[in-house]
Image (cartoon, rainbow, N blue to C red):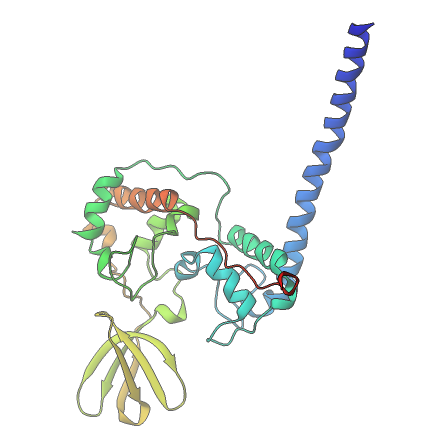
Length: 270
C-alpha cells in the first residue's frame, strides 16, 4: 500500500511540474511581449522600433549601453534635460521591464560573458599604452569626457567591445561627435557639445574643461563626424592587446557590484 501511495505521489508531482513549467514559460513570454508592446507604444516613435534612432537619438550606441540600469530607469521615470518627457505613469515595474527589453535590443545576452585574454595585462594597457583612461573612467579612475566604462563589460559581448574600440564611429551618438570651433578672436577649440541653443554653445574639451561660447563670437563651427576615440587602434594595438583590454573591461563589469535602482517614493509609505 505504501509503495502504491508513493507511486501516486510521484505521478501527481510529475503532472504538477508538467503543468507549472509550461505555465512559467508562458508567463515569461507574456512579460516579454508586453514589454515589447510598451516599447513600441511609448519609445519607438522617437527612438525607432529597434532602438536605432528616428526622431530621437539611437539607444544602441556605446554611451547609452554603458549607462547602468538604474540610470536608464531614472531617465524614463524622470525624463532628461535633453528633452525626453517623464513617464512616471507607466509604473516602476513597467519601466524596469522596458529597460530589460532595451538591453535585448542592444544585443546583450543573458549568460555570463567569457574572457579569452589577460585582464591584468589589459588593465596595464588601459591606463598605459592605449591611453583609454585619458577619456574613460573605470572604477573611479580616469577621465570623464567619455562614458564611464565601469559597468560596460557586464552586459556587452566581447566582439561588440572590440568593435567599439577599432570602429569608434560605427555607431556615433550626437553627443559624442567632435566639434571644431574657431572664434572671431582666432582661438581654436576642439571638443564635444554638451548643450546648445540659438545663441550659445557649451563645449567640453578633452581636458574636461567647459567653454561657454556665444554664437556671435564664433567664426566657424565644424562637425568632424568623428568621435574623440583614436581611429588607429586596429593598427596601433596588436590582436592580443585588444583581447586583453576587452577582457579587462568585461572582468571589471562582472566583478563590480550592480548599481541598485533608485527607490521611488510611495504615498502608501506615509
